[in-house]
Image 1 (cartoon, rainbow, N blue to C red):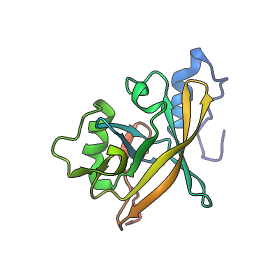
Image 2: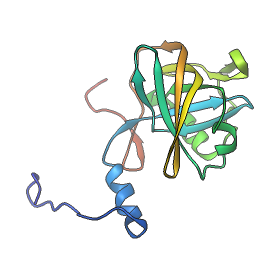
Image 3: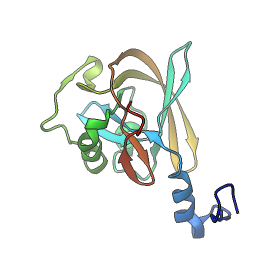
Length: 169
């Protein structure tokens, strides 16, 4: 048993036969939700966003090599990462399903023809700094050239579902 009374930990070795169990275990870690946009216009929902460095300002996200949008993003020199607010789950779901979910959104074209979605919780305009092969994903490191943010509660993803903090953020 683990620390929770009556609960047993599932123990397994990650591999092809345990991919669902591994995915479920990863889903226990709550993350924020982002939409990354690129010229085209094109968008993709990702929860693999992280800060890397303050000086220089670097962030990263991971791109699934089997994604139908891999061709757009794998060497895209300029893109924007939009951190979604709790009220933007429809936007996040739209870009999870389609690269062209811009209809009905308030957005404009920024520098380098990158689509910039308005009213996100935060937005990071990036220039591709480096890519790193990482199994079935490609890690993209971007140098942040401009950033914006506003007050609000973040959209959270855990256990395969969108949600929010319950502490009144």
